[in-house]
Amino acid sequence: MLKLIKLSNTGNSHQIVKVVFSVILSAITLAVVSGCNNESLAAKQPLNVLFILTDDQAPDTVSAFGNKNISTPNIDSLAQQGMQFTHVFNQGAWSGAVCLPSRQMINTGRHLYNTGLDARGVNDPTFKATHQSFGETFKKSGYDTFQTGKWHLSMNVWRRSFTHGKAIHQNGMSRHEKGGHWDANFTDFDSSKTGDAAFTHYKGGKHSTEVIADAAVDFLAKRKANDKPFMMYVGFLAPHDPLHAPDEYLARHPIDKVKLPENFKRYHPFDQGDYYLRDEVLAGFPRGTNEIKDKIGKYYAMIEHTDTQIGRILAQLNASGQAENTLIIFTADHGLAMGRHGLMGKQNQYDHSVRAPFIVKGPTVPAGASAPGMFYLNSVYPTAVEMAGLTIPKSVQAPSVAPLIRGEKDVAYDTIYGAYRHFQRMIRSQEYKLIYYPMIKRTQLFNMKSDPLEMHDLSHMTEHAARIQTMMAQLEDWKVVVGDPLDNNEPEASYDAFLKLTWD
Image 1: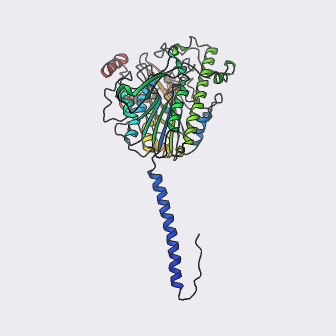
Image 2: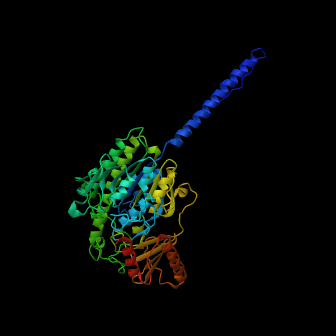
Image 3: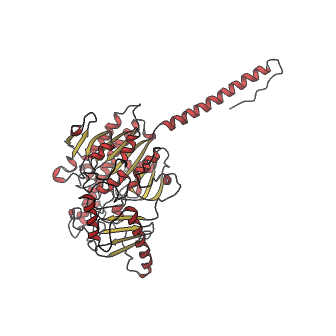
């Protein structure tokens, strides 16, 4: 604070004034330069990115989102310190393994039928050099890019994307008979070697969630102050079946304490397509109440165990001193039915399966904020890139949701499209959802405001005929946007022709 100085009328007064103004000018200059230097340092310090992806985690399986039957304190803390988007969707699947196309969309930022990656996750026939993957964009921008856990795409795309890798799970899942979560297959990457010699394969020897968390913690612990900025891709296998969790977590959810979901059904009202594929036969027909409660309890145990391991990663990030300069995005590849609507898997268009939990935390993200979002998981890629101050590649089709984080708007899209093979198509707004089943020419309509659990089909009511017609037209518009090859008149033939042309 500057004080007024009374100057005497002496011969030295002019010199005193010069000295005083010199001191003031130096102080102002120092403050300005210091401020500029701080701003410059902040501007020059690249934002780190930590992307956490769980597998098969339904959108309501976080206690911060209102589920009082589960304890997820570490995910809760992300929600409290960051921003939650309540309506984020997997765009769909051309495969029973819904997790594969989901990861293709996440890692390319492109729509369901335009990823350029094949149906087996092995080759990348049209994923051109001019197209960049999620990790590749950061890698080309000078970041250390690290991946651990479930990958499920080709290792060619992996090499393009990452500089570091430990405890990589190349496959889609670890089946019970092949070790399950207790002894899953993993791979470490050594950048000093070339070809196949760069990869070492081994069995995890303990729960997959712990193996993956160990790798992430180790990567952060070994970093030095002058290292490059990092982009981490942490892909947990949990809570995908087999439903394996440590005993202490299983003990928290005995059958007599587990509540059935309100929209539980013993059967789905009709065969919606792939009704007897692997996911659906994990439980008997009709669905037994005790069997479903048992599975839900184990499912919750896996999520709580995963939450604990996420806590370890966040603790190490804090210890590294980089937490305040790291953008964290937490989500899942899609949801899961677990007895709701008489279904077990994710091969359906109900919200419990097509939506995912979604949290963003970072230095410019408003704490405790929430918005609908109305976007797809493929927006993870462009959002992270934009918020890190990098340029979004032209090959990316999904929009960044940074404007939503800044509060400029609440939703990215007015309507959302969904698909499952040639069996199902979906269009929904925040108010209504229409599901169309091309093979059996059946339609469902739900009021998502008054009936969020989708228990009351309104499609038979004449007052909704005009709405159904409008929504079917919107669905056709979306099919053009995403490159959907389905012909409603010949669904199976049109889809088979597309698959043969693209992936044979």
